[in-house]
Length: 121
Length: 396
Image (cartoon, rainbow over the protein chains, first blue to last red):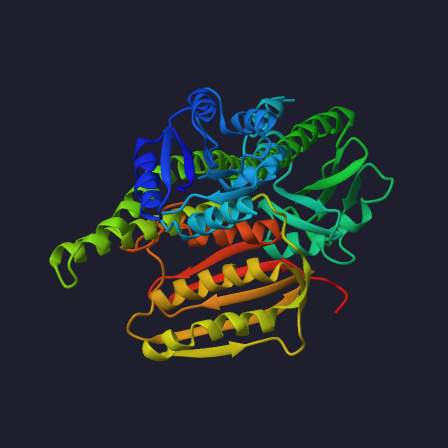
């Protein structure tokens, strides 16, 4: 069965890019442009993995991470950010992985594969 | 007695000490109002323990110098005597009338309260017997002169203080500039990364869909390569901002420079650049973060090489002095345009078409984090020397 990945990012360009790239890799992609929308989608659909942007207006990624882990502690979340300094923010340690955004998506895809593989077990 | 001496002396007051105009009018004022025909003014240098002649009027230079020299008259007023009057200081003479005549010399100390700061010598060919009134006048005029000297000293000290303050202000403003830049760069880096990931990511997707060898594929590749270049700039800027304090370990400056030069071996050969190494004999150990210092030296050497496109000489020299380890990188690239030399350390300032403008900014930041100093010695027509000073670790 296809894995369902939720992409949460306030940038339309990035949502589109991730959708295309991950669908090419064989996943089904669900999109959310904000924290609250993301939480809604997780409730309604079954999601296997969340790609979460940190800096978003309104509810930021760290807050979304906290809420997701509170309610669905087994749902893996990968934090994506343009800003490497967040590595020092304790809130981000709760995520399963932390990737710095780059036009080269190799690292991101590799991380997704590893996490989904772990989940199957 | 004409007391115009005091107003004349006050008129001398507000002038800088270096201005010879202070003392000459003062000397003349003495002579105008007093029955003397020669006047010499001296300052006493307490540190060097020496008299300096500042002005004389009516006294031969040789005589004025003699008074101030070893065994001269002035040597006799440093002590507790308030002044000295000499009769016949210039030897016995016969007046036109045939009578014997004696000259008079009055040596009067200039004291700032109890501190000796100078002296007045008044000479006359005729005998002068200064009475109490004249002495009081001379005392008052001298005090005015002392005031002038002290005022000039104060002005000089004030100027030094102002200069130092200006320098400090400049340094502080530079530091502030760096700080604001840090905030802005962090925000900018973040804001730029998102659209950049889009651009680069879609360029990759585009590439996959285009026929090999087609012009469109080349365009997609170009877009991707430029996007990657921007990413490099951002990464460079963010690295520069990282708060991490340098990881300091002892390292030999000579070795580090050699390593840096080694990196550029190919470029040096291709461009026909001759390398001259003037290293200090013994190794110079400094506490450095090797990674960071490598970047600093790399930037300086790269710049030097860039300035010598048609070949030239790259000179690297190391030395130590006064607790500093000094590394100097000199090129023969003709020097830096004086109009822009003030900007070269500014972030994003570059004269190169493909430059990021961060090289020297980062180098400066690294050296500063090591508590060092970087300076440029610019010789127009010859070349520029970048001099890096780092605190010298005493233990080898």
